[in-house]
Image (cartoon, rainbow, N blue to C red):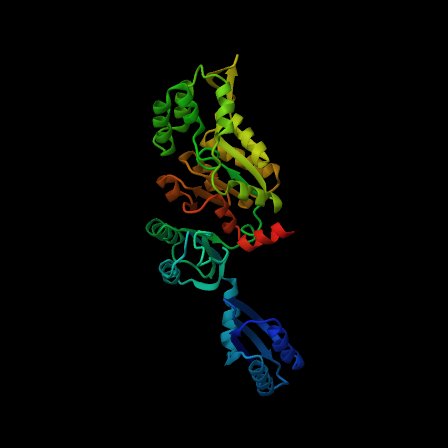
Length: 408
C-alpha cells in the first residue's frame, strides 16, 4: 500500500546533513514530494515529505533514517499523512498567494502578533517567513537600525481593502511599514522605478528654495503645502508660485542645484537598481534644470519635469511647454512603460504628494514615501520609517545579496 510520511529533523546545523539523510532515502528509491529547510542561529529545521512506493515497506526506511539521525546528533520525528489529506493540500496550491513585507527600525513580537492576528482573521495561512535584513549586533546595536521580514501567505482574504486599512492602522500605531502585494510573476519581474523629485528623491521643495532666494519664501511655502495636501489644484497653485519668482537671477539655480539634499538611501537604491537591470526615471512637477542635475549625479535614465523659462539671465515666472501636473505624470509613466516595452505592472512609482496619486495608482507597485496622510491613506503601499533603499526589500532584495554583489 502506498504510504506518505513527513520526516521532521531538527538539531545543530553542519555541512553534510542533507547529503547523509537523502543518501538513505536514495538507497530505497524514495520519491520526495516536498522539502523545506530553515536555519536559525545554527539550529536546523528540515522537513521532507516522502512517498514510499507500493512495493516497498516504510519500516526499514524509517529505521535507517532514525539510525543515521542518531549518528549525526539530530532529532527526528515521523508522521504518516493520509493520501486524501495530501490531495487536499495539493489542491490548495491553486489559491492566491500574497507577500507581506514588514519594515522598521526593529520588529518585535507585538508587531508579529498584531499582523498575524489580521492574517488569521482573514483565513490566510502563512507558508513561509524569511528575514531580508542583516543580523543585528547586540554589542553595536546602532550599526544596523533596520529590520525587514517577508511573509508568504496563501488563501482568499475576506476583504483586501479592510486588511490594508488595518495594516495601515498598525503602521501608524507602532511605527512600522507593512506592504501587502499579490505574489505573481510581475512582482518578481519589476523593470523600472519612477520617482517624484521634490521631498522624495531630495529632501527639499526646490520651488520653496527658489522662493527664499527671491524673498517670497513664506508666500510660496503656504501655497505649496495646500497643493501637497490636495486642497488646491496643482496646476493653478504651480502658476501662482511660479509667478512670484519673476526676476530671480539665473545664477541662483546652479547654487541651489549644487546643494540639493539627497534623500537617505537614494544613492544606494539607484546604484543597486542599475546593477540588476532596472531603468530609472524622474517624473516631477518640479523643474527639469534640477532633475538633469540629479540625473548626472545619480545615473538616472530619464527626466521629465517643467522647463523653467529664463530670458537674459532672469527667471520670467513662466515655463516652456505643458505643465507636468498629476494627470501628466501618469501619462508620462504610461508612455515610458510603452517605450521600454514593459507592462505597467512591472513599474514602481514613488512619490509623496497628492499630485503623485494618479501615477502611484497605475503602477504595479505604487509607494507613498514619507508621504502626507491623505497620500499614505490612498496609496496601496507606503514607507515612512526607512530610507528610499527600503524599496529594495519590497522587491525581495536581501541585505546579504548586496554584500555578495560588493564581493563580485
